Length: 181
Image (cartoon, rainbow, N blue to C red):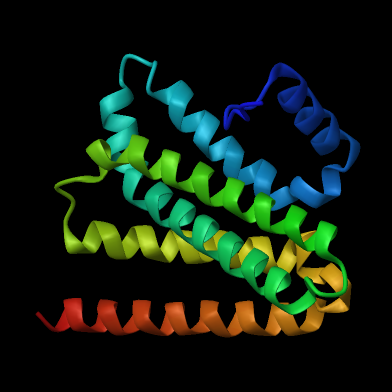
């Protein structure tokens, strides 16, 4: 018998049923809001003034999606490495979710790249400032539920806050350097 790498209709239906049956494994406020940004970018691309709107927001969206994809895959990898021996199914599910978020981010960035070109350093610095503000809000106010996987909420939150602080420090240094020029 020849096995196919392509999913069947039953496989896809099973996946959809699993995601809707276990939404907290895949869907959080972060996922919804960031997916909303992607859907918004796609909708805006259909509007008559799309070039202006997308060109203006593209650097910020690229950075938001970059942080989203990298953060998701790093956390899901940490979960997989740390807990796989004890709970393989749950950790593999979280890892697949992280891969899905990474793919979503990559698709969004690929769609935005044509609009993100030819921006000044100051444009990118403002974009980074807004992206950091967005993610600080996400972490501080809407803390994603998957941060708490297996009771590790405080540890993950600490690492994320340190990473955001490091990114903010770099952002301030870049602003300082730009102002001195």
